[in-house]
Image 1 (cartoon, rainbow, N blue to C red):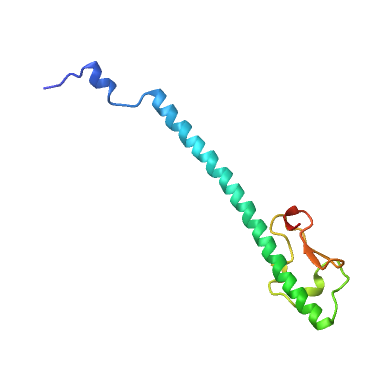
Image 2 (cartoon, one colour):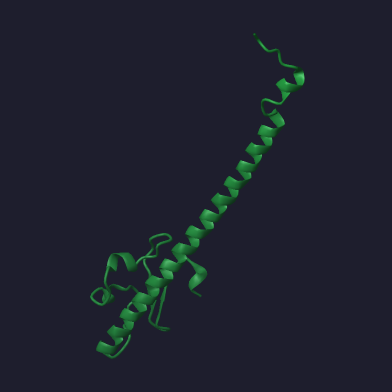
Length: 118
C-alpha cells in the first residue's frame, strides 16, 4: 500500500535555496580568509629564509675577514664562495632570486629589493 505525504512532510525533506546560498557564502568567506593567510605566511617565510641566508653569509664574512685581516671592498659576494656551503642557494634572496650584495662601507650584507633588512 502506498503512503501519501502531506505538504508539511514534503517541505521538510530538503534544503531551501536560501539555506544553500548561506552555506556557499560561508564557504567562500572561509576560502578567502585561508588564501590571504597563506600568502602572508609564505611571504614571512621567504623573508625569514632571506635573513637566515644573510646571517650565514655574515658568518662566512667574519671568517674571511679573520683570515685576510680586513673586509673586502667588492660589492658582490663571490669572494665568499669558498667560505659558505650551498653557495647558489644562500647567495640569492628567496623572494625574487636577486643576488644579495655586500656594503663594504658598513660591512653589511643586504637584500637590495626588500626593506625588511633595514
